[in-house]
Length: 115
Length: 114
Image (cartoon, rainbow over all chains, first blue to last red; front, top):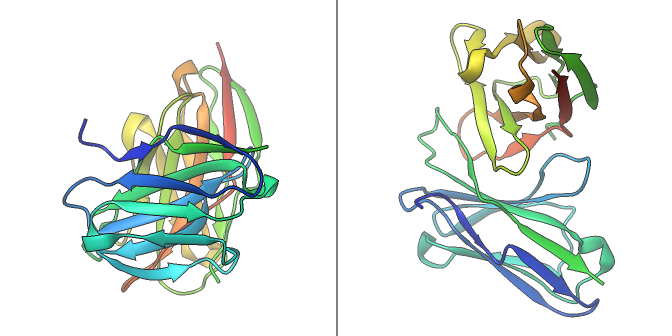
């Protein structure tokens, strides 16, 4: 499978614990996005990378959220001291941004449940 | 900040009925516009996109969308829906040029009844 891979598919954790998700984009894609989606809502932008540079982080995100993309390849999203409100589907998407023809390819997501 | 509005949250149609899903965006500059679809149990995937040129854009599976700049709209249409079109549809916008993120609307759930 040469699509976007996310790991794990499901994560159940207790409130206050830290969690880390991984995303492996399509290999030649230079852009990588993280979105969060809750029931009945569209994907909500969290952050994105152009190669290894994190270009923007949503102002809605608290300091408990951090993302990295070392060497412009895979990315990790960490949530520290999880809260019940963090329960959601976390989506990763990648694209080859040519400046005029961007198409996002999404992974299956990581479903986080905070108890 | 850019935003996207989808006013129809849940649409139920019979097969062969015509479909139009509304999408409005809030930014007045040059934008790129998209419709993504999520079939039950599947990833989000691109249905069609508008970057420039002809404002009437044709996508996969007989879908089309029309960009009306004066109305800040990018409505999705299909003349005759099929049961297999049952899915959730998301409109998205990206400011044109440079390093810009893609912002999604809240989505419209389409249920097609055989």
